[in-house]
Image 1 (tube, rainbow, N blue to C red):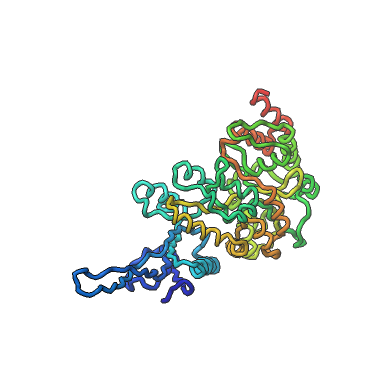
Image 2 (cartoon, helix red, strand yellow):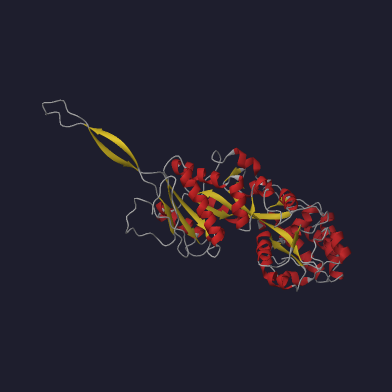
Length: 447
């Protein structure tokens, strides 16, 4: 197989992507999950004089010295290139190949498709190999937002300031940029987003307008959401509380109760419980996937899902529509999380090459194409606005992401989060009224 700065092809084993370069030994042994792109080394002439004892003026000879091409080691989570999705893996193959082929400098890329948080996965290996085998670590990988802080605190990832194109930073949704920040510094650059959406079926096979609390109660729309949380408030209820006027604390501060906001949300659930639209069974669910089958079969009409699950269900033939999370205001909003690029090398040359690749992959149309194939949402506004309008209401999703929040860590909501969760549980089990539930929270806070 031939490979140069302009010609290449990929070989794909069952669980990996492998690129064999020209100039490699025919019998070279590669790990099963390794993909290597390799270009022919540049040749640099080195002048070497002959011995000066000769009677005639010596003529220089030229010795050709191979100069290694710049190399880049990338670990790619399997979740972002599923082995059963040839369309996605082929597209990734194509995009990486275009980067290599379009580079002005011959470049080697060692690419590994890896599990994420299993034993031997990306996270475990980063944590274990950093001390015993740092040379085995990648230069670049993608991680989930919930692992960002711990990896940064352990010194396993490095800040990205000065490496990311300003056009990319300016094009990120505010919540997407916040996903990758720690104390105002960028440690992760969001690539794909996932958002919480209302997915529903309709007998008329037409979208339903209006998902405010009033709209839901008026048409008596039943729905489900993942309410189970331990030691804190569930994210759906928290988002609805914030929409009603509640606030999250400043860093280092405790969360303060907005009693009016809590009452407004609990009164909705009190009324919805009385109408049989929602009950304590929502506390059986910790993740939307736990009721996905019931939504697909029509046992339930509406439920909160991750956008990625919604797209996958639509692709499989389930006739679903998408809208925003129900709130007091009815304004588009959502919770977001995502996968982000992180630097795992402190070598200046490797960091520069890694971020050159990241900036390439983040080009608006390139990001749009890949995230759409993956059933994800892009982190950049212009990429999302160019997505297929047949798959979703682009304007609606744009508005949702523009008014989105990041699920906070459990310690952010503190004791108040636990009391809010207990209050919701009491209302949805019929144990108490909304007003009494709020008063109970105030009493326990000593207010």
